[in-house]
Image (cartoon, rainbow, N blue to C red):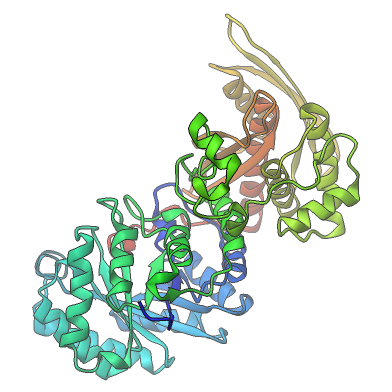
Length: 527
C-alpha cells in the first residue's frame, strides 16, 4: 500500500433512507436535532429528505438547509421536473446544497415498475440532470438497482449523465443482492469503461438484505469509489443500510488501506444514542462499535489478557468512539457544577434553564440508585429537553396504582395548566399501564389510538432508569410520540403518554397535523 491517503466522503442518509425504517418517523424538530449532531460528527453530506414526498419532508429539508452549517445539504428527487423543482425550493437558502436525482436502470425495474425502455430511461436521466444543474452545480445521479443492471447500459447512462453535468454518480445495491467481490469488481469496471468517470466522484449506496452492506461498501472504496452513503446504526429500508460507525472505524483502524474520512469519531457514540432514542430503534447489545457489549469482556481468559495489555482483546480505544470512562463518579452528594462538567465532557451544552431542570432530575435518580452513569445522564438530558420543547397542557401531579391477582387500578391526578385546575379520575385496566392510560383518557378526553409502546433499560441492574417511548395516532391519522425516563416504569409510562397528548393537543389547537403516511411515494423513496 502507498503512504498517500485518499479521502472517502461520508454521505449520511439517516434522515431520508434511515427514516423509512418502519416506526422510525421523525418530526421536523427531531430531524433538525439529528442534522446538527451529524454536523458535529463531521459528515460531508446530509441527505435531509425527499422534499416532494410530503409537506413535512419539504419543511424539514428547508429548515435544515437554512440552519445547519458545515455539511452539504442534499434533497432527493425522482427524475421528474416537479420533484427537482420542489427539492430546489427546499434547498434555496442553503449555502452548500446538492440535488440527488435517480431513476431505475435494471431490466426488472424498467419493465415492471417504470414501464419504460432503455432509451426512454437514458433520455429522461440526461434531461433531469440538466434540469437539476440549473439550480446547483452539485448534482448527484443514481441509477437505481445498479447492482442488477446490465453493465453495458450502466456504463452508457453514467457517461451520459456525467456529460450532462452530474458531479457524483452513485451506484446503489438497492436490494442488497451483490457480494463484495462482485460489487467491488463492478466499481472497477465502471472506472475502466466510462471514459469521463474522472469528472465525477463514484459513490455507493449498499443495502443490508444479506448482511453485506458494510463489506460491499468497503470493497467498493478499495476499488475506487470515494463516497459512501450510510446511516447511523445502519437503519433504513428492510434490513437497513451500510452502518456509518462501522465503515468509518474500519477505515480508521486499518490505515494500511490508504483511505480516511473527516469524521470526528469521538461523536459516534453520542450520535448513535441520539438516533436510537428519537427513532425508537434500539441498538442490539452485540452491535459493532456502538453496542452495549462492543467493549465488554466477560470470559476469564479475555479479562486476564485485557488487564495485562489492552491490545490483546481490543483493537480500538473506547474513547475513540466517545465512550469515556467516568473520571468523576456522580452520586447523591454531587453538586450542580460537577454535573455541568460531566455533561460538557459528554458533549452537552445546556442553557441555565435546561441545567436547572436536569439537576433536579439528576438528584431524584441519584437518591434512588446512588451512582449515576453516563447513559443515565444522557437519558435525563434528552428527557428534560423534550419536556421543555413541548407545550404543556397537562402535567402529572399524582399517580397511585393497585396491582395483584385482581384487576389493576390506577388513580391519576393531572394539573390543567391553562387554568391551574386539578383533575382526578381512576380506571381499571388489563395491566397497570393500561389502567393509567384509561384514567388519563377520562380526564383529557382527546380521541387517540396507542399504536406503539416500548420500554428500554438505560443501564444494567434493578435500579436502572427505564426509558418509555410511545406513539399515538389521532383521528386524522397524525402520529405523535412521547418519551420519558424514570426508575419507576409506571411513572415513566404516564409521563410519556402525557408528553404525546400535549403534542397532539398543541397540533389540534393550531390546526396543524403531521402526515401519518407517505403512501404515494413510499415505493419510490429508496435508491
